Image (tube, rainbow over all chains, first blue to last red; front, side, top):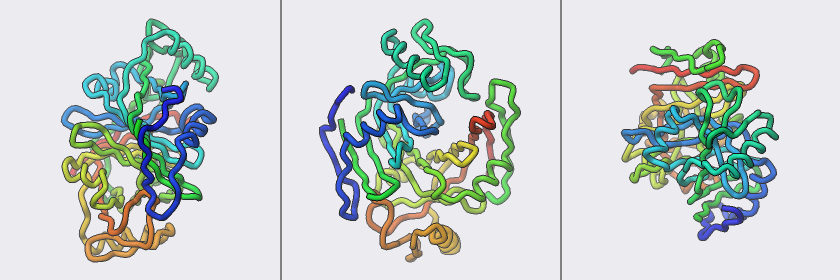
Length: 171
Length: 173
């Protein structure tokens, strides 16, 4: 959603502070190319139970991306219910993105993300429509890992330093 | 869950590291305060979509507590489906707790948790079976707020770069 702008902004603050600017969120995400570690991806398991796991997401060209092994619970959850949340802290702001996640298989995006992962120190390569590397997080399961893009429908942010603001955006 | 010990331990690490010790996770929960780390509450909307929000948590006597205004989306979600998650990053370990959340109305527990929040700088008072204070987080909605307890049936721990381990603990009762 390169340069996608919110269609609705709601100031959630009840103490007279102004709404946050969406551009200030984008600036933080671009500066950090993602969220500070750890960031948590939330999915819903069969039976309607909430499931959440730490991931290392990456912000690229206006979208949040993350990798997940095909056999993991979050991948299996997303296969039947693509609704997903990504929550993390970035530069004094707690940010939650809500939307649907889909597997990305186009080589151009995969290569761009793999290059970004390599810059961050993870030796990722593209292979057969997925990401592979000699290692990953200790509980990530074996390679390859699918690349997911979150199509963000709602974002909300709360600042954890002054001025204390809270805002919701819809896209 | 005072001193509750896991009934099942699974090493999730795939690179030959030993499991994390539950007592080590518990010691971090017992000693680190809420202001040290962000915590995220996950609930499920009526349509089956996940919902996540930052919360101010409080670990007391082996259970995780959090407050939520009765009109908020997370409270409405919990009323319809009590299955929740709390994800938090402590110094040295990321933890995910899964279980059911229920509202606490026991005056003794309410007073105890209010005392812990006050020790962290939030001037909260017990008013009947709910909490009230002059202010809360900017998006916390107006007082009063309910107190909820998460009784975890499963906890995941993932160590940091200096301790690359990952473990799942299950609890009964």
